[in-house]
Length: 168
Image (cartoon, rainbow, N blue to C red; front, side, top):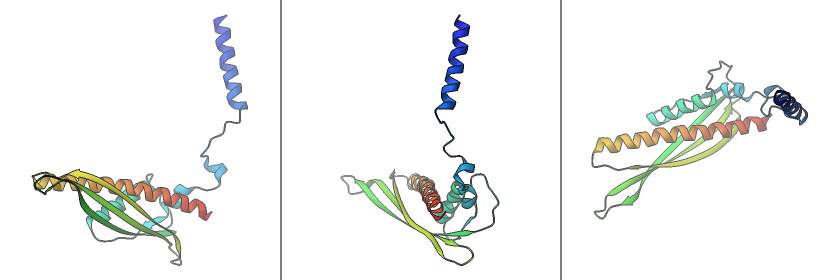
């Protein structure tokens, strides 16, 4: 009796799941656009500096995590700027905590005719402790800068996906 009830319950739930119109939401075949391959066709313009190198690497990892080899259709121009401000001052007037603000302006251009396809600005900030040890402060600042590069690369990736979908 219990075995029959379990079989009927499983069959009923399978029938319910297939009859309610369940479909895969992000199916590439039904959408008609494979934005992963479009993102893999983006080349990022090189610029000097360790922050821009780290940002460029983080964006490459965000837009092409599977390392597809696609023909270049677009190139991405990045202009980053950062500023450091103190968020907490001690009674002696020294800063106990700093805030690192980073802004990245990006332009996505066509590789063939240098036409502007999309552009945008992303901003983010992170704070870190200021220590008496200079190396400790430097390490905390570099860690905050690395975290900001990863966060901003995800924001840029999401905006690029939206821009590519709007192009189609």
